[in-house]
Image 1 (cartoon, rainbow, N blue to C red):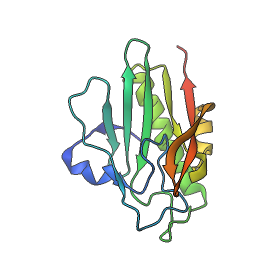
Image 2: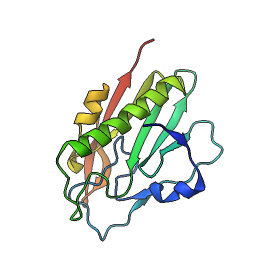
Image 3: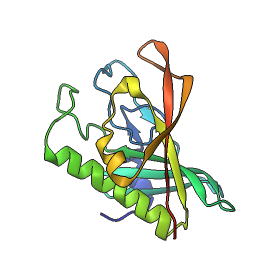
Length: 168
């Protein structure tokens, strides 16, 4: 799986039923179809942000890039509906885990080798029950809790910061 530069034809990948800014932004299990889909903005000429895609599969965005310390916040947004069945329930099985694992691995590899980042971190919202196995397999670990970190399902919920530091 390879990350490539964003093109305007990739715009549909930027909209989906996911929480804004999530490290692994799959559709939450109880997300209402009445809710507006989240859309990230197309890239601008910003020094602290990079947007890439895996064609027809996902976007990967590095934000808040600190080039001096070699760190960035990571967001991965699979195509709308990826990892869920038609009813919005989480699909179980090897395919979802393989795809999400490959996306996380590609994002980490690109961040390390192409962008020369040594620390990646991102938001995880436990109330949305995201799949954590792909993050753990790539080396991400829980770092901190942010009380009332976002609004989800009609209430303020905590968010967690998960991070990965690579050496060498």
